[in-house]
Image 1 (spheres, rainbow, N blue to C red):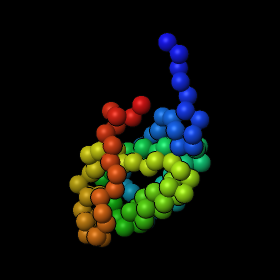
Image 2: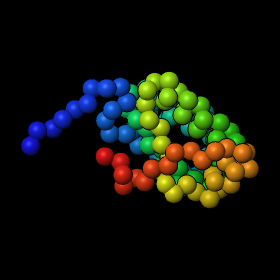
Image 3: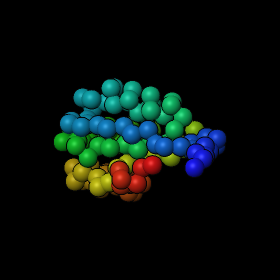
Image 4: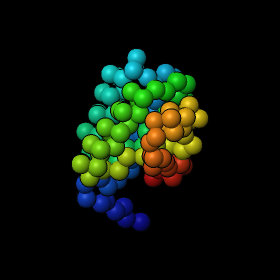
Amino acid sequence: MQESHDARPGAGAPAAVVLAGQLTIATAQPTQARLLAALQGGRPVLLDCRDGTEFDVAFVQLLEAARLLAARMGLAFHLASPLPEGLRAVLADGGFAPLPERPMEAAP
């Protein structure tokens, strides 16, 4: 069986970024660096923050900035589902629309 490769930008298996623990202003710099590195790889990004224990609006701002950058680069940006309840609460409190989720099992 032949393997097929899609040469379009943003095509291919997503780069999985796994974040855990405190995801707040206190961890914003290393989180930003990891998200940027994943996006610079030129592949869609699947962010798994299901093991996050604390979230704040700084983390949500990073998510939105990463989503916008991915869109400008022609890349997909998804959050692994289910989202942690703490992140759902911060999103709801901030009036954010739900972000695109994707089951980890659906990642090629």
